[in-house]
Image (cartoon, rainbow, N blue to C red; front, side):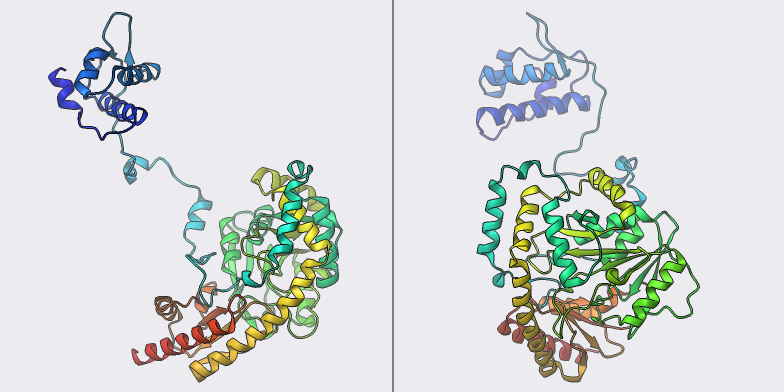
Length: 487
């Protein structure tokens, strides 16, 4: 072997099977050529000579030579040694490195990606779920056998593979449920099935908003909606709440879109009464604004029947109704939906196709059967009883463990509650300290758009049994006491 080649390539190889050994030799020869260490016109040893120097079989070397020749790194002629071809010199980056900023500066991301990246909102709980992660159903209480039968029948159906978005069977079953239990008014073709409620909110935002448009959101409110609205380039304004919800009095602005959670405000749990609902609908109609009504967990209502959805009393056709199956069923069932105005159905169906918002056919068939056979409604009734008990258990356990340091108004429904802290408290610090002892919470201050007006803990109770609730509440009480001594 020539001094140039032996000084360029490391001949020490980790023993491997033949295929991977050939890859090592190929990578080192290719790197030497691209880096200029083996210059244009340099003649490599024969395959026999390379095999002897590398200590490998001639077949292995022949495989490498053939591959380099096919890719244009070397030129092979019958009866001659391989010659390095005219290849532009490149600075290579190894697989365990990433290009630095200067080299990758041309790869600029879009304004949309930059806007989403700036968000401090976290959609999912990292790692294994721990008390009191909000928004989680109790998988231990779910009717897995019934749901499993629905999935198996759907998977075996000869029609499942050909099902497109918004399957009529699911649309019909879901609409029947929503009409009976949520009081919506629509026909089935207006139901758009998406991969999640968040996906539905984003889809609506992108259809309706242009850069610079004004959008309103409750403050405190759902941060995921704020991310979707801001990503369009809209000017997002946080609207303060009073006891009835969005504070509309005296507002002269004319937003293009309003996001709200009237049946169970996120995160305060307040119910928007009928008078404020009528004011909101009248305001939106006069301003020409659309409303996104996120009905995220309103199936669970503990005091009487669930209130009728805002969409059900809308006469101007301004309300987009959004819901999800991941809250009432299982977090892993990533299916959401939206009821859109009649005149926009074709637009949303087209947007679905172009953004890949399609739920697999078997899942749609299984959900249609689960709802149509009454199993979904039966599950809701059973879990409502269980969740009511867990709400009360957490409320009492926190009162015992933390006393007056937490102010709690038990919500009339849902899967989580808000525990307000004393003025001057740092809820972000407290949440970080709770994480160290195995308790998950979300800080109320992060739910505000703009300056935080209050601090507190947003705590889920649905997924945790009595023993877990008691233990978690005790840890919260001890951690709050430690924080107060540390001030």
